[in-house]
Image (cartoon, rainbow, N blue to C red; front, side, top):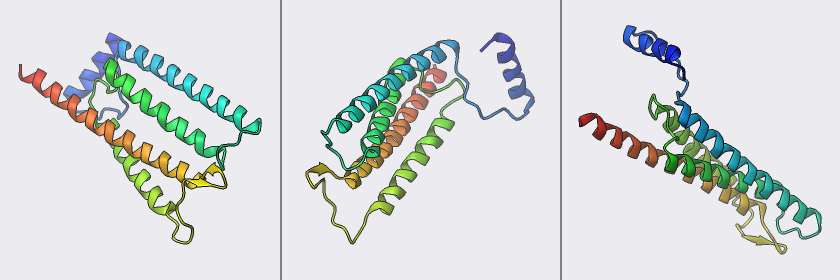
Length: 169
């Protein structure tokens, strides 16, 4: 963020004009977030390619192709979250409100989809016909989505606490 745009941002805050709800990151945070994103997407691409090659070569270990890719996506997002939290680039300069709202939506969506995918007619099983069942993989995906939301809320709470203690000093 350049000094000119930061001055405009501060001017809007002081005059009470509505500030856009876009998260604002400083240059260091933007670079670190980009590096984390590239790492997570590279891992996701490699895992997806390896899984597809295994499934195409006849070593089909799962009922569906989508289930493992969804799990890989959730795991890579979790790695992205933890990597950014470790580097201090998870939350923007203007606070944690947007990340917290996203986390709440992840938790609610995960819980709703778990409840929708519970089928009373078909018993829940992990292995079906010698392969991992698609229902189990999707349930694991939704559990990981909920975990990502909970972790984000915990990290936001810690970030807010540390920010408050810095302001008190």
